[in-house]
Amino acid sequence: MTEVIQFSANLGFLWTHYDLPKAVQAASESGFNAVEFHYPYNADRSVLRKALEGCGIPLMSLNTHRGGDGLNGLAALPGYQAQARARIDQAIEWAADLGAGNVHVMAGNADGCLALAQYLNNLRYAAERAGEVGVKILIEPLNSADAPGYFLNNLAQAVNILDSLNLSNVKLMFDCYHVSRTEGDVEYWFDRTREFVGHVQFAAKDGRQEPDQACMEAIQYIASSGWSKPMGAEYRPSTRTVEQSLDWMDQLQSHQQST
Image (cartoon, rainbow, N blue to C red; front, side, top):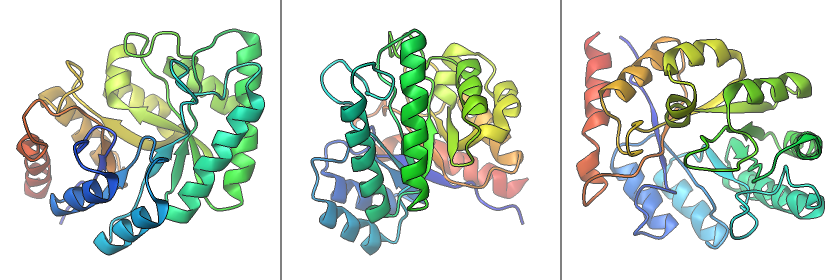
């Protein structure tokens, strides 16, 4: 029988009215196979660890701290190397303690050759530190409408960076929402970048809400390609409660079981 598609609840967007330990519990009770965080650093880490262990649910990923208002990350910002590496160290320490498989290193708002050199140096540093504790590093292109000025803004740029680094523990965060906004054809670009992908996220292209038909088709396509890790539900629910927005999960899992 075909295995059921697995999903990770991104708690940066889902159950945001709860504190993180309670959001972990809500995700587990709603049938998610894993969770992921954006910026958990104001939470009590020991309480978070107990929540994850108590629910028996793994943590897929977390982000490096943005670094301040309007920065959206530090890794590509010339002049911020010490601050960027401190945030990388922080994220890797949290990931190792909480059992997270991945750390998404936020690039920040920058451009130009100096920014690229800074980003590459900081990613090499992150990869070395992460390798010591068995964690992978992720980079993610963000579309310019949602994240104007963000250094990493398309898949070709990301692949060039990954090729240049040639590090086995630095991978691509393939976010179907951003890819649909920037590149268009999610399925085509997943095939083109599959060897680089370390984690998959999704949301509907219009409004970044729960998956619509096109998004669900993309999820099914990625699953049919052999992707078996939990895919991250990083969307803003259009309904009053998260639970009312979860019909897509039942539809996808029921469809897969029937094929």
